[in-house]
Length: 261
Image (cartoon, rainbow, N blue to C red; front, side, top):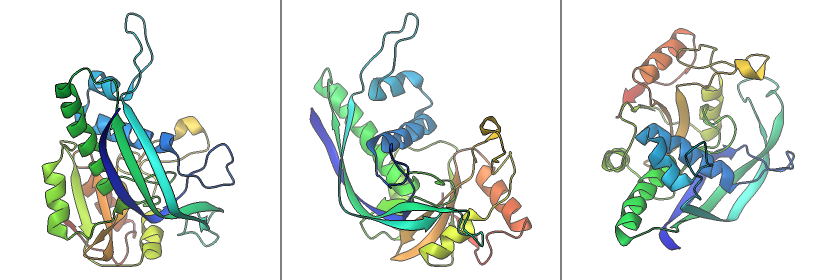
């Protein structure tokens, strides 16, 4: 097993994630693997390539394969605090434990057949994790800026943009950054207050089968030591269309946006 890299990560908005005991907040490797797998599909759209890295079960004439990617967590600097699930509502729609702080993620590759395969997969994994750190999140309500993570390094807007341009990323990715700085709690409240719209924002209805994931995603980032709301989509036109819909509906109050990618 060979090391790919060690990544120091800060949690900006509380991670709403739990294990078997739903009353206790927990940062879990399966949740992180799920996020990385989602980004891999968004970037590469290649099931065979995905299976080589993440593994998969056998189907018909296709044999199963073990994952080559191994992840390890160190989370000594994480605390658990009670958080409202929907901060824009007067009663918060209930509360649950959320995680805040810093953690370290280590990535390794195993069972690589050659040095060439290791180097190719190392670049793939490194890009994947770095894109997830810059654009991704962990846990519940991640499309609405809960569970926002970010690198611990101080980033300017130019450095943030350059990092993304240097990495593999979804071909139709579009990013909009709020120009105004606000607190994390203010940005969480603004991001949480949206509308049901299947085309741009998804919806939640009474039956689980009626849930539609939002094409538009929001997370909180730290640029020049100040907190901003990042609005993005990996589907062409969805970020701009979703923002315009929210603004016409009286949402995203107090924020103006500029496209950065």
